[in-house]
Amino acid sequence: MTLCNESHIKNDIKLSSFAHCYIIFGNDGYLKNKNAESIVKSLVDTDDIFNYQKFTGEFSLQEVYDAKEQLPLMADKKCILIKDYDFISCSQEDFDMLIKICSEKSDECIVVFLLDSIEFDTKKTPERFKILADKTEKASGRVVLVNHRQTGELVRMITSACEKRGCSMSSDTARFFIEYVSEDIDTIINELEKLCAYKKTGAIDIATVKTVCVRNIDQSIYDLATKIIKQDVGGALVLLDELLYMRIKPIALLSSISGVYVDLMRAFAAKSESLRADKVAADFGYKGRVFVMERAMKNLSSFTEKQIKLSLEELCLADGKLKGFSGEDRIVLEELIVRLSYIASKGESIDKA
Image (cartoon, rainbow, N blue to C red; front, side, top):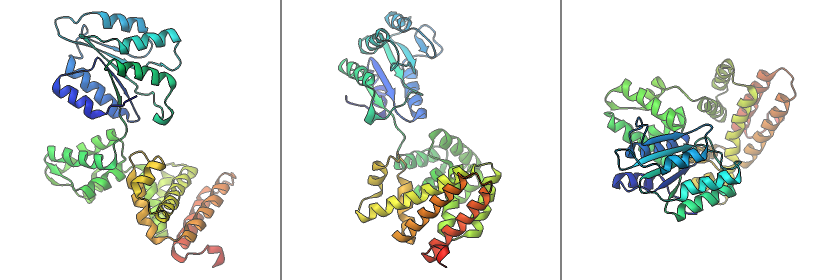
């Protein structure tokens, strides 16, 4: 099975040379929908009920096949969009019909099969998808994988979008912006629109991002871990109070703080083997979040192997206390902040002080 990517779709649209069928799947919902929409709008007017038909929810594949067989009305092409048909658990008869719809060539009708909410690991691809994709590809259709964009791609997208709106943003600020608001493209676009409307012209800096944008909760929790690493106990306790006030569950806070230290442990192992951040990110499934490992490697300069080990032990102890239903969750987290900060500062457990 040979997978295509977004560039193949863009090139098909540019040349007005379309495959008879596109199967679009992957882990980025926004980009999947955007690419499917681009194909459809390049072919037909979505208000044209004769030449554009969308099938979603409950429907019969026989209806889809009949629609495909109908000729376009007063147009060269027609388009059919099939969204989230459950090909994995449908009957064999229906699956055979789906193969027929996706693999039979038609000069007049383009089929777009969008797997929007249906996701799966490409390393564990369902057997039926392999069969469907193989049949479609052999008939000159396109099987398009659309995953989350890497950090570098997002940075280029953000800086370019700012320029189109009469503003500018440096790569460093764009990276901070991604960390601050999230790497979700829907969120990035919404926050970018706000930023450019606020700034109107000129350079957007980090201070402007902090003033205008809504900070991602994950970033707030990461800031908590950062304050602990930097031994800013007072700042960490204030931020903890804010997060608890926002009704973030203590166990979720502990999980996120633990994640930062797990990143440190992986960064330490990577450094020992002279591995780069992008290699480690790929091996551990960070999915376009290389900056997380880059950040961990940067923080690693303040830690020894012993400090990482002691910190992980404290996190395990805190986990046991929170799950023990003692009713003193805030105290457990406050004590954890002090203990982790002490380890970061002195290199020893507070119990040995």
